[in-house]
Image (cartoon, rainbow, N blue to C red; front, side, top):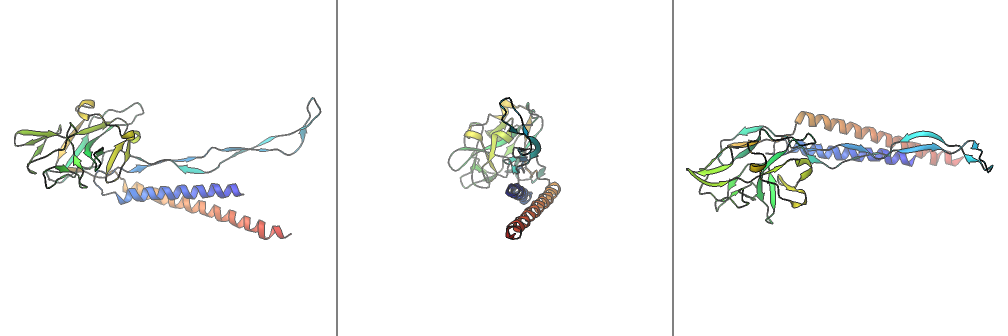
Length: 278
C-alpha cells in the first residue's frame, strides 16, 4: 500500500512541475525572442511482481523449492525530464526602429536527428563571456555601443563590441552595418545545428553553449540560410491556445493523482484504526 502512496505522489509532483513550466511559457507569450520550454513525462522502470507462495516443486535432492508464478508488472511512478527550449521561429513583427533586428530562418539545414538548426546574435555578458540571443531589441548606450535591453554588448563577427556614431545606420540582409556608405561592422551571428542539446537558457533571454564552447560563425556554416531584418523583432513562439489546453490537462491529472492518494489514505486509516482493533 505504501508503494501506491509513492506512485500517486510522483504523479502529483510531475504534474505540478509541468504546470509551472507551462505557466512560465504563458507569462512570456509576449516576450521578444522567447523560446517556449518543452518537456516529456517518463515512467520509472517497472517492477515484475511474482507470487512466491503455494505448492513446492520437487527436486533431485528431494528438497522442495517454492513455486513461482508471475503476477505482472507494477509501475513505480513517473517523472519530468529536463526542460529544453523549442527553437522554432516566432512571428516577425515590424517596428520601424533602426536598432531593432530579427533573424529570419530561411534555408537552415536539418541534422541527422531531423532537427533544424538555429542562428543567434552573439553578445557579451557581464563577466566577458559569450552568450547568444534571439532578442534583437537593441539600443545604443551613452558611449555609442550597441547593447541588449539588459546592457550586454552586441558583438561583431570578430567578437568585438560594435560602436556606432548614431542610430542612423543600415543593416543589410547579410548582417553588414553601414553608416552612410561605409561598412562599420558585421553582426556576429552564431550557428547551432542542434540547439536543443547544445544550448541552455542563462536568463534575460540569453543562451550559453554547453561547456561554454563557442558557436561557429553562421556566415561560414550556413551561408545564405538566413537573413537579418532591420526594423523587425521576432515574437515569442509560444502557442497560447495549446499551452492553455496542456495546463488544463496537467491540472486534471494532478487532481486524479490527488484522489488516488486520498483513497490510499482512507484505506490505511481503516487498516490501522479499525481492523487493528480486532
